[in-house]
Length: 264
Ligand code: NAD
Image (cartoon, rainbow, N blue to C red; front, side, top):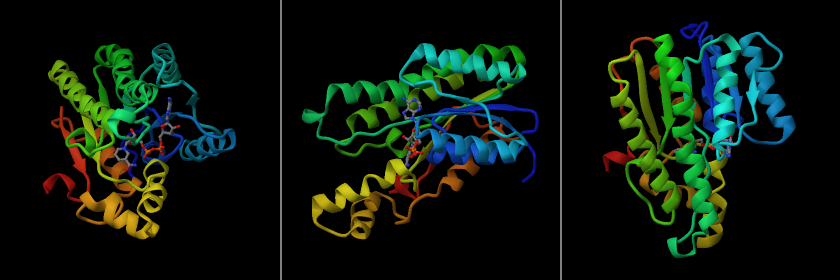
């Protein structure tokens, strides 16, 4: 891997698992100093820190346990990342949760949690990180939205509302920083093979009385014309493009990586 991020510091929220961990892997392999964030079993977090640390040539990579539903913890996490080397070049807002339910049964506390973690955390992190990026004259912000940031599906009201909000936030921030050497873009994946998405297969199979393969193909991936998962590494490579050299002209974009979902 070419070390195109040598010397840069990257903070990736929700990076103890799935897409965030995949982005951490590729950024660290490209030379970045990566700070992880997210929840999980202590041994899984330790394993992720050791794996990313090995790519950085240290025993354990930096890690913040900040809860993305808590604005004060988000601000402290950004300050901690800046303190690593006196700079924060890359912010990836990736942490996210899901809840599936008809709107009339949707628990209000789930709505609040999804809006806080999937949308408001992006605002709080950008708000905290942007002044330093402007002062240092360099910055790359990626918000991991979703195909559900561009189109809806039933029973995912909070998620769809939050992800549409992320795309709007991305565009607005992009316009504000358009003349600075900073970009702010959203990645809009379809179904990606991660714990968050795979957890939806079994309940679908049980609900419809079909096999998990049928549930995956005919229900979960019904809208994804490729009829296959997008892989974490494919999303990570899109993120690497957005933070690497030659992508400075891409700003305010909502980039689909969804096996053709939005084309239909
Ligand atoms: P995942 O469940 O594998 O990972 C989610 C990460 O967020 C984990 O590290 C988890 O610990 C962290 N997290 C959850 N709540 C948190 C909190 N309060 N504070 C800090 N961290 C928290 O999920 P994933 O599939 O990798 O999803 C990552 C992002 O990609 C999410 O924003 C998700 O909406 C988005 N996305 C996923 C898919 C998909 O099919 N997997 C598709 C489109 C978009």
